[in-house]
Length: 341
Image (cartoon, rainbow, N blue to C red; front, side):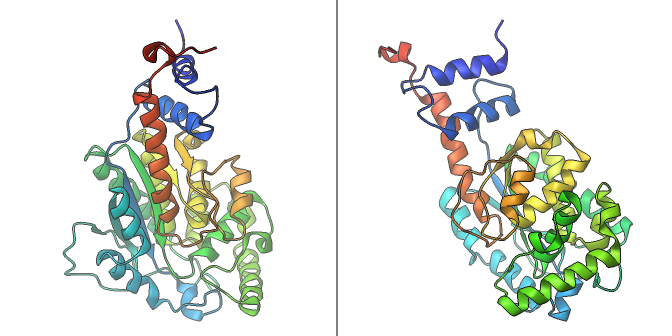
């Protein structure tokens, strides 16, 4: 009896094409088949979930070139359908959910089926002076991320991509990356939403001070502590969402720099989580390539994008659908009567 992997490889290799001619699409077809434990995988009701949260450090202006208020403004833009992720989700028929994980704004009264109020607090505290959040808040954010994915799974969704929005959140992601990968803060820190050279050097210096202040090297193997020290509510919620998506046996489409930093934390909880992950793209944000190398990940796209919002995942999901479709619909040499030699 052939194993499932052997069955899938046989089917892929006997389609009407030269061996390996569909390149990465063949690898994705195999991976999705193994995730779903079938030779007839499918992508059903794919979703993009964007988690939004504010960061206390952003109010200082030390690490960000845009004001903190932009986070809330962009959430309204998502809700009103005007952001890049809205355009891509509409184009590819992806369901979009926008989550207030901890934005410094009152969204009460918002009536939009795409909006989810999961607010922990109105942003984290300034981690240059104290912990970003309590450990209890970090645990609550992770649990809320899990619950959101449970609800989405009940709609029949089996493929999910995650995005984020939060002025200052590349700084949190850089610190999380540095702690877990043991790379220097400088190697992990990029321009974020567009810092100039002077702003970048200020950002690096401040984050180096934060790393030392919180002694992050001692928290690398404890994601609850790490998130409580320097995380964001959206990053903690993302962490829980990844964990639950793997538990639900979903195909997880990993976006850019901040989303991958949350995956680093989620991987500590579940060492097998990468088996469910398809990496959408290489972000233009400094450090992402090294983060991907740390995970031995091979992203599908490299478009120089560094927007966030789950935009890379939205572009990658159609490629995953194409991989599944060729596996299910393409003729074999035998069925088409085509010679294989």
